[in-house]
Image (cartoon, rainbow, N blue to C red; front, side):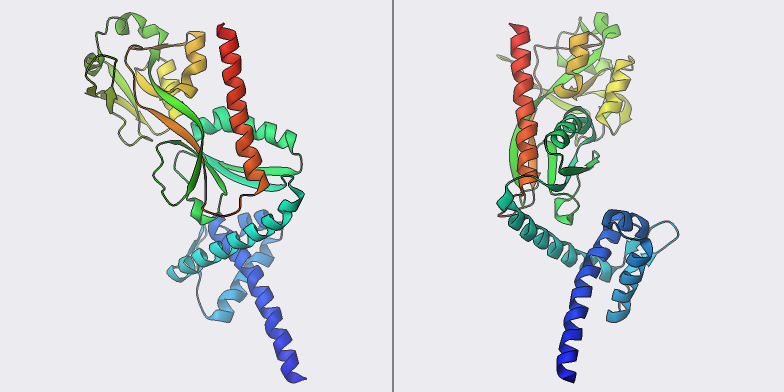
Amino acid sequence: MEKAHNSLDTGANQFNNLKRLAYFTAVVETGSFTAAADRLGITKAVVSQQVARLERDFHATLLSRTTRKVLPTDAGQAFYQRCARILREAGDAFDELAEVASEPSGTLRLTAPLDYGIIAVVPAIAEFTRRFPQCKVDAVLRDQALDLMSGQAELAIRVGWLTEQHLQARQIDTFRQVLVASAAWHEQVSKLAGPEELTALPFLANTALREPTHWQFSRHGAEPQQVSVRSVMSMDATLAVREAVRHGAGLSILPDFAVQEDLAAGRLIHVLPQWGLPSGGIHAVFPAARFRPAKVRAFVDLIQERRWGQERVQKESSQ
């Protein structure tokens, strides 16, 4: 009887330890016990007690606690990587089981750049939650790319050129780079003969880009021109650069989706429209997996559907 009791006790401990993995992972990803408790829907005391029990049972210090933030120790970081992978696999298993209903449900965790996120992703989120009221969306909008392998998001929208070869991607749109200035600059920029003359004008650099002051211009029948512009202002957010351009601070190169309304309204003007700049793709990116939850597929389909609808409207209005 004693042996059976020990076996049962061991099973219960293993079950409790699996729950503690989720508590510990949430603390690492949110940086605090309070935020982890909010994410998990339980009290801060439960999270703190269970993580402390995990450390005590295995005689390991997993977290460094300060008055401002909780950070993983070296041992905690290594343990977190394993925990995040286990929880992703468990999430995939439950999602696959739930897929028999084929209806999107649960919380969709996604990330996108701040500019494209505000302009295109947020409206898509609003429509997504109306169309699928049983779904919630947790979105992180920032220009620094979030590592999908951390488990903090199951979908990323990437604007530009993909460098993460270990991830799966689906192209949902394209964009063009556009040289723009405020309407107040019309007289100066209308006299420009070519890109080489841009060096005499103030340029606003977007430091979220790899090379914000070096650009290649191309034109049919002409040799491509490499231009290094003179930066008088640098900012790390596309929408901030656009706002400075609107206020006449200088010229800048911005993605078409960020300036199309201003161009149509005449607030901004397209400078050297006969010269083209590099274009790029907009992709939905996923961690490599055999299974894709219905909520992820439905959102990607919706955002692409919205883009096609916008293109139809633009074509009809131009006819």
